Image 1 (tube, rainbow, N blue to C red):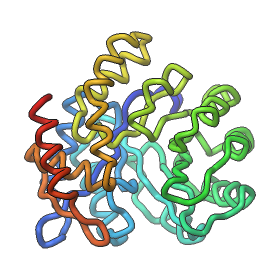
Image 2: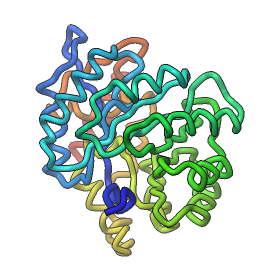
Image 3: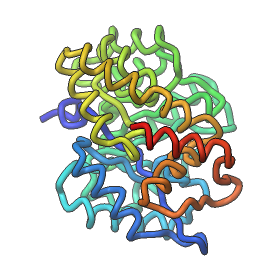
Image 4: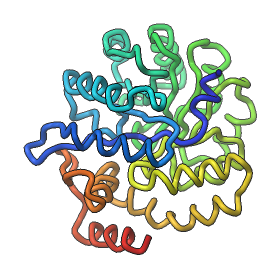
Length: 294
């Protein structure tokens, strides 16, 4: 079975819960993972940027990864986030992290450096050649400062054999459609934008790697399956039910928003590592009211 088939549907971009002393809260990780899997998500993504990886040590990352494998226990596929703006350092991580129980690596484009399109091509080509698993590109220019263009993505898709797909979060629907139109047949295209995934599935997306699936896993994954099956009327009803919630997730910061939701739901402590801070009292109150309304 191709990676495009295996990772169709909803992947959850897992948070990393912390205790009040800022240490990693492993029992809370287990609660969040079990809730997501029991609620129907198709796979989990650990150590992504929603997991606050810039403030997590390499030792902690490996501990989180091993614990995730243990909790998932083969029930769904696991995708591992490994990225950075130092190509050589990222290659070392690809070659040293325990990836034997994962299915693919998701790698965010280099941040801050703002490489040219050729630089982005060469970065991803080098990672793909070093990776023991298929590589998924992650284009999120709102965070990295540089868009991975459709032309560069398609060049990588057609020329580099170990690049298997992309998480596309540019918010550019035309760019998204160019990718769908011109991709190789086995190239996975998933959305990185919860609020846009419904129209993107209509355009040919295979699914989503979702922040919202941490807190609304049953409703959200059901919506995605309905849309992929062509039942857009039923999917649209769920989409508009959750729409205000998507806005609250990202209104002040991700993952501060999703952690506020999960705290209200009783899964985690509302703790982030600096420079991130919890959402404002006003937003927290609105999140509580939104959850009550559901």
